[in-house]
Length: 337
Length: 115
Image (cartoon, rainbow over all chains, first blue to last red; front, side, top):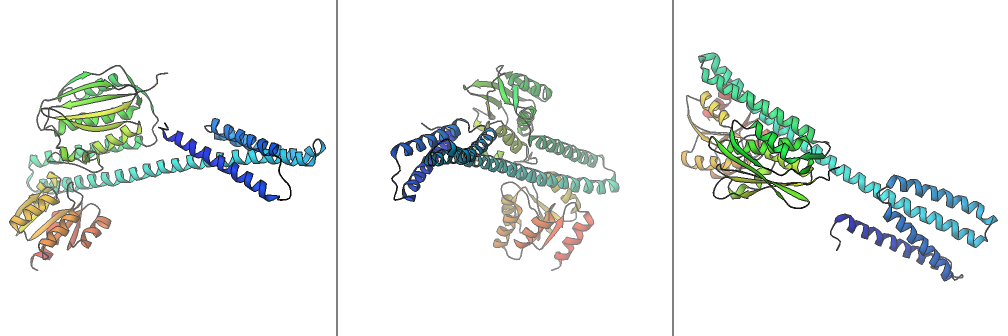
């Protein structure tokens, strides 16, 4: 029944509050053994505590308002404690102020718990981002230093024999550095980018146009809006590039279609290249993984995965019969406003 | 002298072949392939890149030394400070930091040839 995480969290919170109520009632009944606490008073206290619980559960999304409300109630409780003796009997006055202060105590406690949880989540996200940037930084430095070694080395030989072929090698590496820097730029904006809605068909057609000269691309994608931002384009761009670069032949065919899954939509990109062996299908999305004679920095598909996950999506590889690779990007549909 | 060059970047392997054209150079794309080639040709020196797919240079160095503890492995890395230290710990004799010159490469190799 409790399928999502926040429902489970709420249930745990409710249990916690109820146990506090029980602990409170127990303390109340043992703290003054000579006096029997009237059942009416216990019920009133429980009812007010339950009220606090409801206030908490209903308004847990608004922790700032809740904190203000909690402090207000606390102040009111103290105020009541001071003035209520003029209007009520001493017992009643103590009871009213106690209940108010206790209620506010619960509200405040849970608001702070909620804030703490939010901060912890945020901290986790920040740590992921820092790790991500560290990995990226290290991979890029590796790529660039590698390329520089090759460039400087060939330059040394070029000075000796002026062989034009060496210049081609140098240019190839310079282009590679250029591409690595573009990847870095993409990844940089990946950190802290905002999600919005994006038309999937337009996005795919846009990417297809970029590769029009390099592959035969057919697009049959629905006019559907998905959660994402401009980074999604570079993710799809990377998959196209992967197909062309690792396809193992020229004039590769790429087919893109979409499949509606209700709350999500699958973007299915298939090619007729050499395919990806089953044993490494999951590994290709790992950081730094590269494979075969056309291997690159191994950052492309890692960035694709991270990007798609940022938009609550998934990316995986399925077998494509009889040949080639089938990438599936599962994206969340956007609620169009 | 037989030299085995292990690097996942073909351009780097081509460059090393060019720099070492007076020697008998063999190539491997990753650690796993290096073990295979090593078994067949028994090189005098192995030039080992560290960050490679399938099997990295550190694991490969350990494996090669298990096969022949006298093997001369020289690490080649862009991150001499930490990765370099790791490969030395794994048993490599020396580390060459990228980017390097032909002169530096030959100098380092010469240190280990006559021993």
